[in-house]
Length: 176
Image 1 (cartoon, one colour):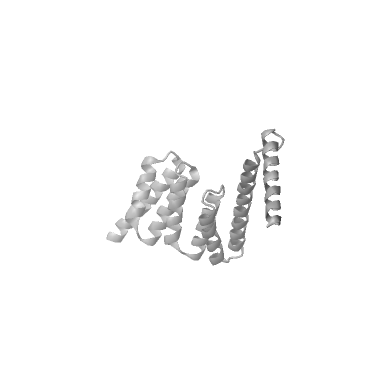
Image 2 (tube, one colour):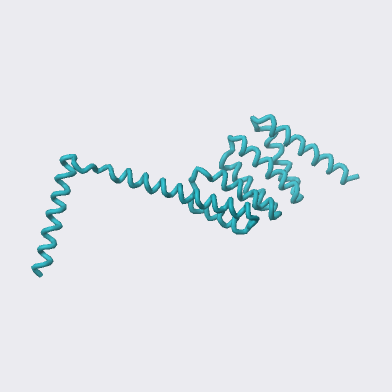
């Protein structure tokens, strides 16, 4: 019993000394910010490593593993700076495996996350092309019309007009 009270007395003295050091400004209390910054940096590095792994799997033509790495990245690191690159890697995998529906959906997600960027608009156009390949001309027509009416990029708008013209031409030749 006596030993427990001695340990307790030592803890009380240590906490008292710590309080004095903090109040005198000798021991700064800003350690919390630097620790959180270290954790944030480490989290970013871990996300970068997972992205590198996904790219390596893609280069090795191991598309299933690359898709799984990309999906894990998107779940674990939703606000990571490389989210756009991971989504593009995911699209490359879907394109290589022929999963057109997954490609279209992923490209739409890129557009929804980055609607005011050139790459976001390009993803919207790619999703429209994917819907054409799946035979869902109604959805593709809607996307192409939206691009033509609401885009600030003349290059992408011209591509959308060309796709729309081709769809209409092919539609007329099917009806003949």
